[in-house]
Amino acid sequence: MSDTPLTMQRALGDADIAKLTDRIEAAQTQATAIPKLTEDFPAMTLGDAYAVQLQLLRRWVAQGRRQVGWKAGLTSKAKMDQMGVRVPTVGFLLADFFRPEASVVATNDLVHPRVECEVAFVTKADLSGPDLTREQVLAATDFVVPAIEVIDSRFSGFKFDLQSVVADNSSSARYVTGGRARLPADVDLATLGVVLEKNGEPVAMGSSAAVAGHPADAVALVVKVLHEIGEGLPAGSFVMSGGITEAIAVQPGDYVCARFQELGSVGFRFG
Ligand code: OOG
Ligand code: MG
Image 1 (cartoon, rainbow, N blue to C red):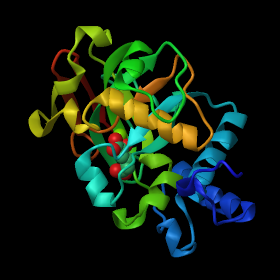
Image 2: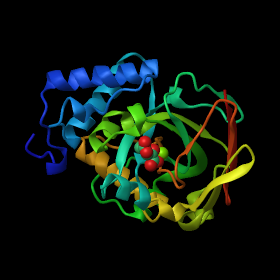
Image 3: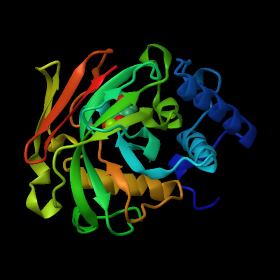
Image 4: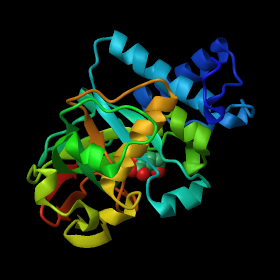
């Protein structure tokens, strides 16, 4: 495609994309760790990685699984510096990744579960295009709600690169929402504090400003990446704006709770 942005150009053919999608699908479904994809496919580009992610999405939707929205990955400066990127990644979210608050979230179907605190947005108008403003995102927001994302990198020893993470759906695995849904106009989304507790002890804390400067800016960046891969964000989407805190590893039996200023708390146990 001539209008494919340079960053999304592909190097691999369709047969290799299908083979890589098989690998990621097997690793996610069987909860087994695999080597990073670039070991066997060193030419793999970011465009190839999104081709794998979208093929995985299409396969699962064809099986009757339902997409609820998208998430931002690597939106905090610390995570971006770590990966040497300036643009966040995106990952799709399915309805069956959801787990209710106060439930027991199984770990036997996950590889390396870690938790992070996020502000989630639910939209009420379609969003698309490469340069939405914070105000446009907020005007299209129905409400915001606190969430814990359970990420799960499927790569052995956490050895991965940007292409591998993106193909692995930006480590998406589970998400739990709770607390209070709030109108974006009623809270100061720029500087919401959050404390993440594990077994009653604070283990990470941060401010929503860590997420691209403002979580609505992170949503605008999600829409920009979606634009580059030929997708938009329909009204009614659930969007997780990216980890505010660092991701914390968890074990079976751990109880995690995220306490957000103004949004209340969300907690659950791992089984
Ligand atoms: C990639 C996913 C990151 C976030 O909120 O930054 C992510 C990873 O760190 O494994 O979900
Ligand atoms: Mg996240």
